[in-house]
Image (cartoon, rainbow, N blue to C red):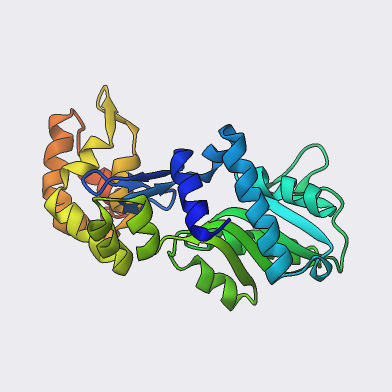
Length: 279
């Protein structure tokens, strides 16, 4: 199986979505025209098995079975790939929790982590690198060595560079590059390639053209915001645009019944103002 075959398997399983007209909101509250959900593979056993075959071959070829003692995966999406890989390679598996639990066995690591173990982390995606680096540091915090990170798909958003800065080699089956787009995103390849060249600039230009995007992804009930994702795109994803788009967004929120909508866009400023004591 090649990178091309992996791309086709992901497309056929519905793991890839492209929409330059109505971008997707990511966990970081950034936006972009590409959404990758590799977890969908688990509902297509044939494609899932093919990708696992290629993941195993890539690990054996580029890392080597003797180069690690255990396999880890972060909850939850990584586990769809990390657990089967561990079974195939005959290695113990460690689950890395997103947060430490204060009940049961507690801690962030589930399994039998051993100080000094060499761990290969297996993931579904490499994105901006925040979660990836967090998984690695959690393992290293328990005195384990992590030098390799294998992923099904690299979104090419800088995560690979961040991992390499941590001293971790990255091994991915497919990447979000021009060749991949030509194969998987026929008809939208040019627009998405523009996004890949400058994700931040692409998103800013889109929001300037269509500030209504913020409102379409914000739900209000009884004057209260009950779904804030659209606002978070502006306040968390692109705070530098708040001043530029504030007028249009506040006007829209006002029509939706929100009182003092500027407070939602500049909460810190208003909180500081409320705490001031007049003399």
